[in-house]
Length: 418
Image 1 (cartoon, rainbow, N blue to C red):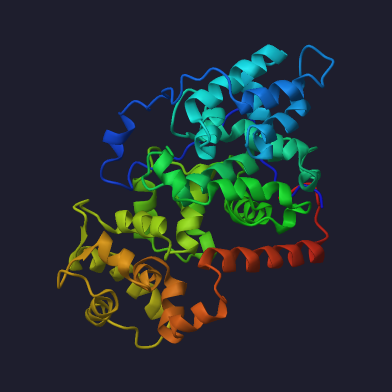
Image 2 (cartoon, one colour):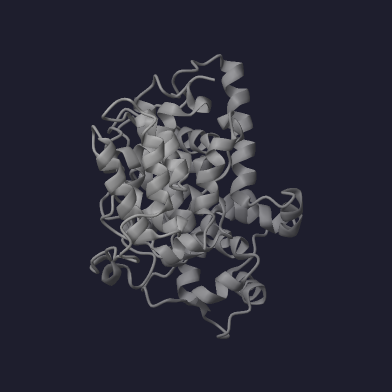
Protein backbone atom coordinates (compact mmCIF):
# COMPACT_ATOMS: atom_id res chain seq x y z
CA UNK A 1 0.00 0.00 0.00
CA UNK A 2 1.45 3.36 -0.96
CA UNK A 3 1.53 6.44 1.21
CA UNK A 4 -1.84 8.03 1.75
CA UNK A 5 -0.69 10.90 3.92
CA UNK A 6 0.50 14.06 2.28
CA UNK A 7 1.44 17.21 4.12
CA UNK A 8 2.81 20.16 2.24
CA UNK A 9 4.10 21.99 5.30
CA UNK A 10 6.83 21.52 7.83
CA UNK A 11 9.48 18.90 8.16
CA UNK A 12 10.25 15.94 10.32
CA UNK A 13 12.61 17.91 12.53
CA UNK A 14 9.83 19.78 14.29
CA UNK A 15 6.85 18.39 16.11
CA UNK A 16 4.11 20.96 16.45
CA UNK A 17 2.23 21.54 19.67
CA UNK A 18 -1.40 22.57 19.89
CA UNK A 19 -2.52 26.07 20.64
CA UNK A 20 -5.12 25.23 23.28
CA UNK A 21 -5.03 27.72 26.14
CA UNK A 22 -7.14 25.77 28.57
CA UNK A 23 -8.15 22.35 29.71
CA UNK A 24 -6.97 22.25 33.28
CA UNK A 25 -7.19 25.03 35.81
CA UNK A 26 -3.49 24.88 36.71
CA UNK A 27 -2.09 24.72 33.20
CA UNK A 28 -0.21 27.99 33.37
CA UNK A 29 1.31 27.34 36.79
CA UNK A 30 2.45 23.86 35.77
CA UNK A 31 4.03 25.17 32.57
CA UNK A 32 6.13 27.62 34.58
CA UNK A 33 7.69 24.86 36.74
CA UNK A 34 11.14 23.76 35.51
CA UNK A 35 11.28 20.14 34.42
CA UNK A 36 12.88 17.91 37.08
CA UNK A 37 16.28 16.43 36.30
CA UNK A 38 17.83 13.04 36.94
CA UNK A 39 19.71 12.05 40.09
CA UNK A 40 22.00 9.07 40.58
CA UNK A 41 20.39 5.97 42.02
CA UNK A 42 23.67 4.14 42.35
CA UNK A 43 27.34 5.03 42.68
CA UNK A 44 28.20 1.69 41.09
CA UNK A 45 30.41 2.36 38.10
CA UNK A 46 29.97 -1.00 36.39
CA UNK A 47 27.19 -3.56 36.22
CA UNK A 48 26.04 -6.63 34.36
CA UNK A 49 24.48 -4.29 31.83
CA UNK A 50 27.78 -2.54 31.13
CA UNK A 51 29.60 -5.86 31.01
CA UNK A 52 27.11 -7.30 28.53
CA UNK A 53 27.30 -4.19 26.35
CA UNK A 54 31.10 -4.36 26.46
CA UNK A 55 31.00 -8.00 25.37
CA UNK A 56 28.68 -7.15 22.48
CA UNK A 57 30.88 -4.25 21.37
CA UNK A 58 33.88 -6.57 21.16
CA UNK A 59 32.12 -8.29 18.26
CA UNK A 60 32.42 -5.15 16.14
CA UNK A 61 35.69 -4.67 14.31
CA UNK A 62 34.94 -1.01 13.60
CA UNK A 63 35.91 1.67 16.10
CA UNK A 64 32.66 3.56 15.55
CA UNK A 65 29.14 2.18 15.36
CA UNK A 66 26.30 2.85 12.95
CA UNK A 67 22.68 3.35 13.92
CA UNK A 68 21.90 -0.19 12.76
CA UNK A 69 24.41 -1.61 15.26
CA UNK A 70 22.23 -0.33 18.07
CA UNK A 71 19.56 -2.99 17.49
CA UNK A 72 21.46 -5.34 19.78
CA UNK A 73 22.56 -2.61 22.19
CA UNK A 74 19.00 -1.53 23.01
CA UNK A 75 18.00 -5.14 23.65
CA UNK A 76 20.88 -5.63 26.07
CA UNK A 77 19.81 -2.41 27.81
CA UNK A 78 16.23 -3.72 28.10
CA UNK A 79 14.86 -1.01 25.84
CA UNK A 80 12.16 -1.29 23.14
CA UNK A 81 13.64 -1.89 19.69
CA UNK A 82 12.63 1.49 18.26
CA UNK A 83 14.70 3.36 20.81
CA UNK A 84 17.78 2.32 18.84
CA UNK A 85 18.02 5.61 16.94
CA UNK A 86 17.33 7.85 19.97
CA UNK A 87 20.08 5.96 21.83
CA UNK A 88 22.39 6.34 18.84
CA UNK A 89 21.66 10.09 18.77
CA UNK A 90 22.19 10.35 22.52
CA UNK A 91 25.65 8.82 22.30
CA UNK A 92 26.99 10.72 19.30
CA UNK A 93 26.49 11.13 15.58
CA UNK A 94 29.57 8.91 15.16
CA UNK A 95 29.64 6.93 18.42
CA UNK A 96 32.77 5.15 19.52
CA UNK A 97 32.67 1.99 21.58
CA UNK A 98 33.86 3.90 24.62
CA UNK A 99 31.16 6.55 24.19
CA UNK A 100 28.53 3.81 24.05
CA UNK A 101 29.87 2.25 27.22
CA UNK A 102 29.87 5.63 29.01
CA UNK A 103 26.22 6.26 28.12
CA UNK A 104 25.16 2.74 29.13
CA UNK A 105 27.00 3.16 32.42
CA UNK A 106 25.19 6.43 33.09
CA UNK A 107 21.89 4.85 32.04
CA UNK A 108 22.41 2.17 34.68
CA UNK A 109 23.40 4.67 37.35
CA UNK A 110 20.37 6.93 36.93
CA UNK A 111 17.69 4.36 36.02
CA UNK A 112 18.86 1.08 37.51
CA UNK A 113 16.56 -1.73 36.41
CA UNK A 114 13.51 0.49 36.02
CA UNK A 115 12.61 0.09 32.37
CA UNK A 116 10.39 3.17 32.11
CA UNK A 117 13.10 5.38 33.59
CA UNK A 118 15.53 4.03 31.01
CA UNK A 119 13.11 4.84 28.18
CA UNK A 120 12.49 8.40 29.39
CA UNK A 121 16.21 8.94 29.98
CA UNK A 122 17.03 7.94 26.40
CA UNK A 123 14.15 9.82 24.75
CA UNK A 124 15.03 13.04 26.58
CA UNK A 125 18.78 12.44 26.11
CA UNK A 126 19.10 12.67 29.89
CA UNK A 127 17.79 16.24 30.07
CA UNK A 128 14.45 15.69 31.84
CA UNK A 129 12.37 13.18 33.76
CA UNK A 130 9.28 14.12 31.75
CA UNK A 131 8.55 13.82 28.05
CA UNK A 132 7.74 16.68 25.70
CA UNK A 133 6.51 16.46 22.08
CA UNK A 134 9.92 16.85 20.44
CA UNK A 135 11.33 13.92 22.42
CA UNK A 136 9.46 11.44 20.21
CA UNK A 137 10.71 12.71 16.84
CA UNK A 138 13.80 10.50 16.48
CA UNK A 139 11.95 7.39 17.59
CA UNK A 140 8.99 7.80 15.22
CA UNK A 141 11.23 8.86 12.33
CA UNK A 142 13.26 5.69 12.84
CA UNK A 143 10.04 3.68 12.94
CA UNK A 144 9.08 5.11 9.54
CA UNK A 145 12.53 4.49 8.05
CA UNK A 146 13.15 0.96 9.33
CA UNK A 147 9.83 -0.82 10.04
CA UNK A 148 9.00 -3.19 7.18
CA UNK A 149 5.30 -2.39 7.57
CA UNK A 150 5.84 1.29 6.75
CA UNK A 151 7.93 0.86 3.62
CA UNK A 152 5.17 2.48 1.54
CA UNK A 153 5.48 5.67 3.58
CA UNK A 154 9.21 6.24 3.18
CA UNK A 155 9.35 7.73 -0.33
CA UNK A 156 6.79 10.44 0.49
CA UNK A 157 8.81 12.46 2.98
CA UNK A 158 6.09 15.09 3.30
CA UNK A 159 3.94 12.40 4.88
CA UNK A 160 6.40 11.78 7.68
CA UNK A 161 5.48 14.98 9.48
CA UNK A 162 1.79 14.14 9.36
CA UNK A 163 2.32 10.71 10.87
CA UNK A 164 4.71 12.02 13.52
CA UNK A 165 2.38 14.86 14.54
CA UNK A 166 -0.61 12.51 14.66
CA UNK A 167 1.15 9.95 16.86
CA UNK A 168 2.61 12.56 19.21
CA UNK A 169 -0.72 14.34 19.58
CA UNK A 170 -2.46 11.07 20.39
CA UNK A 171 0.22 10.08 22.92
CA UNK A 172 -0.27 13.27 24.90
CA UNK A 173 -4.04 13.12 24.53
CA UNK A 174 -4.32 9.49 25.65
CA UNK A 175 -1.70 9.45 28.41
CA UNK A 176 -1.67 13.02 29.73
CA UNK A 177 -3.63 14.04 32.80
CA UNK A 178 -3.14 17.77 32.26
CA UNK A 179 -3.05 19.93 29.13
CA UNK A 180 0.55 21.07 29.63
CA UNK A 181 2.03 18.84 26.92
CA UNK A 182 4.36 17.15 29.35
CA UNK A 183 4.17 13.49 30.31
CA UNK A 184 5.48 12.82 33.80
CA UNK A 185 6.65 9.50 35.21
CA UNK A 186 3.43 8.96 37.18
CA UNK A 187 1.28 9.43 34.06
CA UNK A 188 3.49 7.13 32.02
CA UNK A 189 3.42 4.41 34.69
CA UNK A 190 -0.37 4.40 34.72
CA UNK A 191 -0.48 4.01 30.92
CA UNK A 192 0.25 1.24 28.43
CA UNK A 193 3.04 3.32 26.89
CA UNK A 194 5.74 0.64 27.19
CA UNK A 195 3.53 -2.15 25.91
CA UNK A 196 2.60 -0.04 22.88
CA UNK A 197 6.29 0.52 22.14
CA UNK A 198 7.02 -3.19 22.52
CA UNK A 199 4.12 -4.19 20.29
CA UNK A 200 5.56 -2.27 17.33
CA UNK A 201 8.11 -4.99 16.63
CA UNK A 202 5.44 -7.70 16.78
CA UNK A 203 3.60 -6.53 13.65
CA UNK A 204 5.03 -7.00 10.18
CA UNK A 205 1.87 -5.51 8.68
CA UNK A 206 1.38 -2.00 10.04
CA UNK A 207 -2.27 -2.11 9.00
CA UNK A 208 -2.79 -4.33 12.05
CA UNK A 209 -1.23 -1.85 14.48
CA UNK A 210 -3.83 -0.28 16.76
CA UNK A 211 -3.74 2.51 19.32
CA UNK A 212 -1.76 5.73 19.08
CA UNK A 213 0.65 4.36 16.43
CA UNK A 214 -2.18 3.23 14.14
CA UNK A 215 -1.54 4.22 10.55
CA UNK A 216 -5.20 3.69 9.68
CA UNK A 217 -6.23 6.22 12.33
CA UNK A 218 -3.68 8.72 11.04
CA UNK A 219 -5.10 8.22 7.55
CA UNK A 220 -8.63 8.91 8.77
CA UNK A 221 -7.70 12.02 10.75
CA UNK A 222 -5.68 13.52 7.92
CA UNK A 223 -8.32 12.71 5.30
CA UNK A 224 -10.96 14.60 7.30
CA UNK A 225 -8.57 17.51 7.83
CA UNK A 226 -7.73 17.68 4.13
CA UNK A 227 -11.40 17.66 3.18
CA UNK A 228 -11.93 20.78 5.31
CA UNK A 229 -8.70 22.54 4.29
CA UNK A 230 -9.88 23.68 0.86
CA UNK A 231 -7.07 26.18 0.30
CA UNK A 232 -4.44 23.66 1.45
CA UNK A 233 -2.72 26.13 3.74
CA UNK A 234 -2.57 23.56 6.58
CA UNK A 235 -4.79 25.79 8.75
CA UNK A 236 -8.52 25.73 9.39
CA UNK A 237 -10.65 28.80 10.02
CA UNK A 238 -14.19 29.03 11.37
CA UNK A 239 -15.76 28.59 7.94
CA UNK A 240 -13.68 25.46 7.35
CA UNK A 241 -14.80 23.92 10.62
CA UNK A 242 -18.41 24.87 9.89
CA UNK A 243 -18.29 22.29 7.06
CA UNK A 244 -17.29 19.54 9.49
CA UNK A 245 -19.71 16.58 9.19
CA UNK A 246 -21.91 18.65 6.84
CA UNK A 247 -22.51 21.36 9.42
CA UNK A 248 -22.90 19.23 12.54
CA UNK A 249 -21.56 21.87 14.95
CA UNK A 250 -23.51 24.92 16.02
CA UNK A 251 -21.94 28.36 15.38
CA UNK A 252 -21.56 28.99 19.11
CA UNK A 253 -19.66 25.75 19.57
CA UNK A 254 -17.32 26.63 16.70
CA UNK A 255 -16.76 30.05 18.22
CA UNK A 256 -15.85 28.49 21.56
CA UNK A 257 -13.46 26.01 19.94
CA UNK A 258 -11.57 28.87 18.30
CA UNK A 259 -11.83 31.12 21.35
CA UNK A 260 -9.69 28.66 23.29
CA UNK A 261 -6.93 28.54 20.70
CA UNK A 262 -4.02 30.95 21.01
CA UNK A 263 -4.40 32.16 17.40
CA UNK A 264 -7.27 32.65 14.98
CA UNK A 265 -6.47 29.46 13.04
CA UNK A 266 -6.57 25.77 13.89
CA UNK A 267 -3.40 23.81 13.10
CA UNK A 268 -3.33 20.15 12.15
CA UNK A 269 -2.29 19.20 15.68
CA UNK A 270 -5.15 21.26 17.09
CA UNK A 271 -7.46 19.38 14.76
CA UNK A 272 -6.18 15.98 15.88
CA UNK A 273 -7.12 16.84 19.46
CA UNK A 274 -10.45 18.29 18.35
CA UNK A 275 -11.40 15.21 16.32
CA UNK A 276 -10.41 12.76 19.06
CA UNK A 277 -12.53 14.75 21.50
CA UNK A 278 -15.45 15.14 19.10
CA UNK A 279 -15.70 11.50 18.11
CA UNK A 280 -15.45 9.99 21.58
CA UNK A 281 -17.10 12.27 24.12
CA UNK A 282 -16.98 9.53 26.74
CA UNK A 283 -13.17 9.71 26.94
CA UNK A 284 -11.93 11.54 30.08
CA UNK A 285 -9.88 13.96 27.98
CA UNK A 286 -12.83 14.65 25.72
CA UNK A 287 -15.00 15.36 28.74
CA UNK A 288 -12.43 17.93 29.90
CA UNK A 289 -12.17 19.42 26.40
CA UNK A 290 -15.90 19.96 25.93
CA UNK A 291 -16.59 20.93 29.52
CA UNK A 292 -14.20 23.86 29.13
CA UNK A 293 -15.87 24.96 25.93
CA UNK A 294 -19.34 24.94 27.47
CA UNK A 295 -18.09 26.67 30.64
CA UNK A 296 -18.43 30.21 29.31
CA UNK A 297 -17.35 32.01 32.49
CA UNK A 298 -14.62 29.52 33.38
CA UNK A 299 -15.86 28.98 36.94
CA UNK A 300 -15.69 25.19 36.77
CA UNK A 301 -19.46 24.70 36.75
CA UNK A 302 -22.00 24.44 33.93
CA UNK A 303 -25.11 26.43 34.76
CA UNK A 304 -28.58 26.31 33.26
CA UNK A 305 -27.92 29.66 31.60
CA UNK A 306 -24.73 28.47 29.91
CA UNK A 307 -26.38 25.31 28.62
CA UNK A 308 -29.38 27.28 27.39
CA UNK A 309 -27.08 29.60 25.45
CA UNK A 310 -25.78 26.60 23.48
CA UNK A 311 -29.12 24.82 23.17
CA UNK A 312 -30.83 27.89 21.73
CA UNK A 313 -28.90 27.43 18.47
CA UNK A 314 -29.34 23.68 18.65
CA UNK A 315 -33.11 24.05 18.96
CA UNK A 316 -33.33 26.31 15.88
CA UNK A 317 -31.39 23.78 13.80
CA UNK A 318 -33.33 20.77 15.08
CA UNK A 319 -36.66 22.52 14.40
CA UNK A 320 -35.81 22.51 10.69
CA UNK A 321 -35.10 18.77 10.68
CA UNK A 322 -37.68 17.41 13.14
CA UNK A 323 -41.30 17.97 13.99
CA UNK A 324 -42.04 19.14 17.52
CA UNK A 325 -38.43 19.46 18.80
CA UNK A 326 -37.90 19.07 22.52
CA UNK A 327 -37.82 22.28 24.59
CA UNK A 328 -34.86 23.39 26.67
CA UNK A 329 -36.85 22.93 29.87
CA UNK A 330 -37.43 19.27 29.00
CA UNK A 331 -33.82 18.81 27.90
CA UNK A 332 -32.51 20.35 31.11
CA UNK A 333 -34.61 17.98 33.22
CA UNK A 334 -33.40 15.06 31.11
CA UNK A 335 -29.78 16.08 31.68
CA UNK A 336 -30.34 16.29 35.44
CA UNK A 337 -31.76 12.76 35.37
CA UNK A 338 -28.97 11.53 33.11
CA UNK A 339 -25.99 12.97 34.98
CA UNK A 340 -27.39 13.19 38.53
CA UNK A 341 -25.09 16.07 39.54
CA UNK A 342 -24.18 16.42 43.20
CA UNK A 343 -25.57 19.95 43.05
CA UNK A 344 -29.20 19.94 42.04
CA UNK A 345 -28.84 22.46 39.18
CA UNK A 346 -25.10 22.77 38.46
CA UNK A 347 -22.90 20.36 36.52
CA UNK A 348 -19.29 19.90 37.66
CA UNK A 349 -16.52 18.23 35.68
CA UNK A 350 -16.49 15.36 38.18
CA UNK A 351 -20.23 14.82 37.58
CA UNK A 352 -19.66 14.34 33.86
CA UNK A 353 -16.69 12.01 34.42
CA UNK A 354 -18.91 9.79 36.57
CA UNK A 355 -21.65 9.68 33.95
CA UNK A 356 -21.65 6.64 31.66
CA UNK A 357 -23.51 8.63 28.98
CA UNK A 358 -21.43 11.82 29.03
CA UNK A 359 -21.43 11.73 25.23
CA UNK A 360 -25.23 12.09 25.20
CA UNK A 361 -24.96 15.12 27.49
CA UNK A 362 -22.38 16.89 25.33
CA UNK A 363 -23.97 16.05 21.99
CA UNK A 364 -27.19 17.62 23.23
CA UNK A 365 -25.46 21.00 23.10
CA UNK A 366 -22.68 20.48 20.55
CA UNK A 367 -23.49 18.18 17.61
CA UNK A 368 -26.90 18.58 15.96
CA UNK A 369 -26.95 15.27 14.09
CA UNK A 370 -25.74 13.28 17.08
CA UNK A 371 -28.38 14.96 19.25
CA UNK A 372 -31.12 13.96 16.81
CA UNK A 373 -29.72 10.42 16.72
CA UNK A 374 -29.89 10.20 20.50
CA UNK A 375 -33.47 11.49 20.41
CA UNK A 376 -34.52 8.74 17.98
CA UNK A 377 -32.41 5.76 19.07
CA UNK A 378 -31.47 4.32 22.45
CA UNK A 379 -27.80 5.30 23.11
CA UNK A 380 -27.26 1.96 24.83
CA UNK A 381 -27.97 0.27 21.48
CA UNK A 382 -24.96 2.04 19.98
CA UNK A 383 -22.78 0.79 22.85
CA UNK A 384 -23.88 -2.78 22.19
CA UNK A 385 -23.18 -2.47 18.46
CA UNK A 386 -19.56 -1.48 19.13
CA UNK A 387 -18.88 -4.88 20.74
CA UNK A 388 -16.57 -3.50 23.40
CA UNK A 389 -14.63 -1.08 21.20
CA UNK A 390 -14.45 2.59 22.13
CA UNK A 391 -16.41 5.24 20.26
CA UNK A 392 -13.18 6.37 18.60
CA UNK A 393 -12.13 2.85 17.57
CA UNK A 394 -15.55 2.15 16.07
CA UNK A 395 -15.58 5.44 14.19
CA UNK A 396 -12.02 5.12 12.87
CA UNK A 397 -12.49 1.54 11.67
CA UNK A 398 -15.76 2.38 9.92
CA UNK A 399 -14.42 5.57 8.38
CA UNK A 400 -11.25 3.91 7.12
CA UNK A 401 -13.29 1.25 5.32
CA UNK A 402 -15.47 3.92 3.72
CA UNK A 403 -12.43 5.91 2.59
CA UNK A 404 -10.88 2.80 1.03
CA UNK A 405 -14.11 2.03 -0.82
CA UNK A 406 -14.28 5.62 -2.04
CA UNK A 407 -10.67 5.51 -3.20
CA UNK A 408 -11.34 2.28 -5.10
CA UNK A 409 -14.41 3.74 -6.81
CA UNK A 410 -12.69 6.95 -7.83
CA UNK A 411 -9.41 5.29 -8.78
CA UNK A 412 -7.52 8.04 -6.95
CA UNK A 413 -3.74 8.09 -6.71
CA UNK A 414 -2.29 5.87 -4.02
CA UNK A 415 0.57 8.27 -3.47
CA UNK A 416 -1.44 11.29 -2.46
CA UNK A 417 -4.52 12.02 -0.44
CA UNK A 418 -6.12 15.09 -1.97
